[in-house]
Image 1 (cartoon, rainbow, N blue to C red):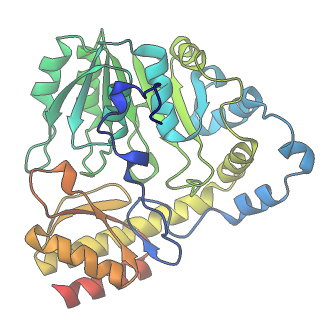
Image 2: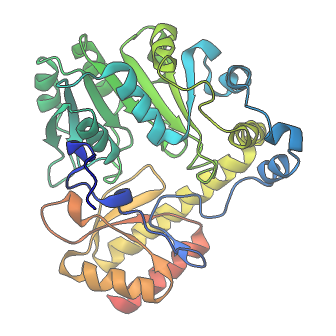
Length: 351
């Protein structure tokens, strides 16, 4: 019998579970921009040492914010903790977006901005990077004059890997007096560019961070929102009383105590990325400069077969075909130099 209680109309046409792929165990996973070597051993020890009492009681998130705040050069009152960066974006919608509000995006970008806008019945105004992956600053400044409710900007951007410089971000904030500007800095540890120090003087600025990338805690899910204390207070209001789990908090605290581990991994990725891009250049594969742990490459009509052949050799890359007007674009997570040499050897064989 067909249910008389139907899901929301906003769900019509949406892919189930956002097309997330499982069954990735045992493969070289260069498709989701994860840490390819794993978290710090100190994190593993901290989680293993958790007591039964800790696991059976609710986490104390305010105390965790106070301990984590110095790492982000912020005050605890300027933070909100979330179940991953995806949930951080949801919290922003919960706190600031009404039905019919306009959301400004520059695509291709992280798809959750558009997905949440649809769920909240917001109107989405979309600008695009051009074929050279240049940021449309003039279009953004013109759109901000129309006072959208929120402007979401991934910086560095996923999947293009492009970075909007701080001077440009300053112009955007000056033009956005009536718009909440959300700068998603999921890849900050790799780029080194942040606007976090500006939160104290820009009440309409929200910075998103995550422990999923450089720290290697994607499986535990911990995101952070950084904003002026009044803005952060508004962001915490719609959250449940225990928004994150105790294991994620324990792991994050261990990770920030072992910062050398993440710095070492980031340096290895940067060296591997430089060598990998040089190899792409030699192979005549168009790609774009990236300050992140991934590179966007254009393999043209060869992309579909190449992705299939890589999977046959137990290596997963990310097909970004839906983001562009034609097939060919592939996003490749950068791992260690040894891992990327394996990718290059296979590329040379296939191309």
